[in-house]
Length: 637
Image (cartoon, rainbow, N blue to C red):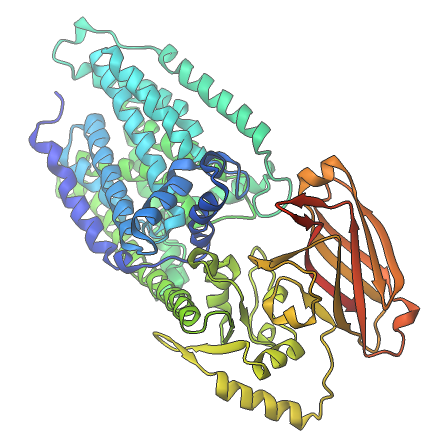
């Protein structure tokens, strides 16, 4: 018979466990990739192109309007940079996932013990930490809501034969593509349920002879939709061929599978939280043997529901297996649901049997929770503490801008960890603040993540920094534990003593980041005002630049909008003290250009020169000429 009405409330206890275990996540703030999504609302307001921001491929070609773009834009428009509503939505989504896991487990087993244990095992797994604490990983909670919701409707269709459940299942499944690409595997999940559990569901019907139930033909339309989605997605967002997200279809897939299996049963960072390597191996062996024993026992009795649980794990993990260069435990958030349901089913079967049989399931489940729960708590606290440092930094910069409008803000003492979680992801765009930099020589203590922003663009030349300090164009702040402290006066004294100690001769910078306000004093009057770290030039513009003693080349880097280049190439000429140093063409699709010109003879022996940059043709809009956008201009040794 179907589970009793009383059993439907089994989900309340796991939800209480969810709230307790991830309680620190409620005070976790934004970090890392969050800031890319938090900048979307500003771009929509600037460009008035909501559909493009929602559906244009981004970040490795992903198109996730519900779980990333819409999630951030809606909540940010309502609550600004208050992270609590983001966390509440994440918790509510996880609670809905729990309720569906309970319901599906009850349909498969008819056991309230199984319905309680399955979501508890899922919640405890360390794989959930990022989804519960990091807003950018919300897709890992929303996607299973669509997968589980569609499956629940499909099960109702199997059990009742009512066609409306099938249609609603199709709607929920189709909407799931807006949450995460893994949604493409749903037809395999539905087919696995139909083959492995569906017959058992029909046998529990009050009148089994009245309804035969669907065949695999019931999942053919879903499979067709998945194939069509994959084909269209490949066209609009081709798979990366290099980098961390490139796919490798070789034997590394087996190695990746073994790693993810281990992380499913043993926390990935377990050794960093006080457990030995031997303990981790013992836990893995215990869990693996327990699962193998249960699966074999069930198959010997021709009970195939265990194959559905394993199928869930395998098919939802499969899309991640070719990513050998980007293995991460939070990819297990969805696959681990299958292992959790298997563990719940085993607990439900053996709970009312003899003490010996009960121990077979109690011991591995207890060992699993003993390993997972403390690590999950510890990792949650780690993410919370790091995010609060980012919060101090970003909101401190916002306060500094209000105190010092029009001045560049330079930060001192930023650590590698804080840089990679904040600065490298342009967090200040989310609060509408530009001109935030790091003190010169910060590159000596910061090791940027290879996927993050260019550290060099955030480091002003020492001469530019000194000019800003002495002309009251710069304020310097240092990060304390819970606030930013203004250290401009002390920093200026320190730099003054250092410059005097080495008897430096004042020279002009040998490189210019044109969009950086600290270099504005070197630019001629023709340049347009800076915009988010870049600056347009009209048809002609000048600047002054220092000449290093061993200079051999002049470097220019900038961009030109692709639409302009498609219409006509741009002719670029560079003059140094009136002599032509470079003459080149910029063609589409070379929207980001980079040019190296030999050091002109006219600059030999000089400490500084005037550069004139000319571009033709230009675009004229609202009475203003727009030629090229410039970033870096430098003399290279």
